[in-house]
Amino acid sequence: MKPIHSLLTLIASLALADAQEKLPRETTLESTKAGAVKDFALLDHQGAFRQLYYFAKDPATKAIVLFVQGNGCPLVRKRVPELKRLRDAYGTNGVVFWMINAHTQDSRAEVAKEATEFGIDIPILCDETQLHK
Image (tube, rainbow, N blue to C red; front, side):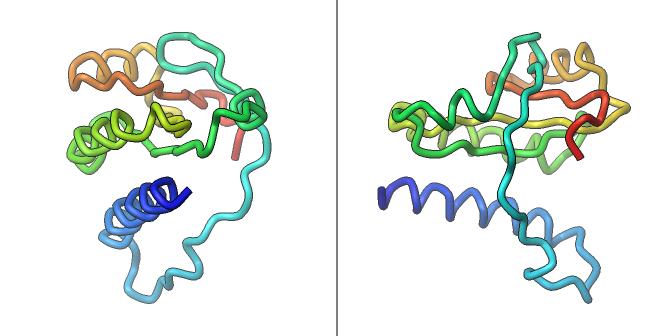
C-alpha cells in the first residue's frame, strides 16, 4: 500500500502546485481540501460509460485518480506526460486513472480532438450537462 500512498501524494502535490499558482494569496490549503466523492457516472470522450461505483467495488482497484482537464489549458498539457508515466507505472497495480472535463464550452467532440492532438490516451470523462456539481 505504501507505493499507492506515494503515488497519491505525488499527484496531490502536482495538483496543489498547479492550483496554488492560481489561488489568491489569502486562500489557505484548508479551503482547497475536497470531501468524499459520491458515486457518479459519465461518458468519456470516446463515448464509453464510466461509473465510479463499478470500479470502486472491484477488489483489484486500489485507487482512482481524477485529474481535471480543460481544452487549451497549458497546465494540463504540461502534466499529461507525467500523468501517463504514473498511469503506466501504477495502472497494473490497481490504480485507475481518469481525467474529467466539466467545462460547458468543451464539447465531447472537441475534447476527443484535443486528446488525439496531444496524445492523451487516458479516458476523459465529460460532464457537459453539469449533472455533477
